[in-house]
Length: 286
Image (cartoon, rainbow, N blue to C red; front, side, top):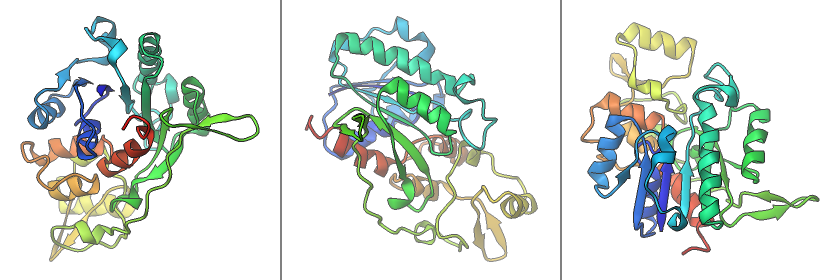
């Protein structure tokens, strides 16, 4: 299999394919964060880095041999945590660059499979726009079924899709994973939590408050951050815990400082969810 991964981040897609035993001949990654590229090349030195997605027309790729396109286009303008500019925003609008690339690849390989992901808090009108562009309805999967983190996301794919309803609309064919019932307390390296599950970790996990007072104030007033209660103080989630919340091994980000790892993990995909998805959308390819 040859893969083109857009907005590749820490290459969760590549890790998932490896974990479920799918051999990758060439893996092309479009990514601009230096620490993301560094982590990817550490684990997968044969990854072909392409740089900025906006320069895609300059890429030297045999598109006829691309079997799978991955896209986790930015959610900043779609998320409830953002300013809700939707697909008209500069960040989330990069989705349309993915569409341009997908349509171009289809000229050379009409059978190429895609996977697109975005936040479940997106406005339904924006979700419908994405579905119309892709020609398939999404499924919603919460990472809480497989990890200790509430991370609800939409996933669109035409791999092994099915027709549904009176009008025979194409539906992403991914069943819900079995609930492993993992609790936040189960993955802590020390301390206690007053939550059953962690809030969805975000890129902002890389910028925790500098004082105990501000950390506790944000936790109590906003509630959108995660804290761990230790004897006499509170702390942010450490690197090991962040890896566990996204389904990665404890030492996966060891080459990075905690905040750089947090930036990638908070902005990325849940590994165990992507493994589950691949087992279904690539079913006919195995």
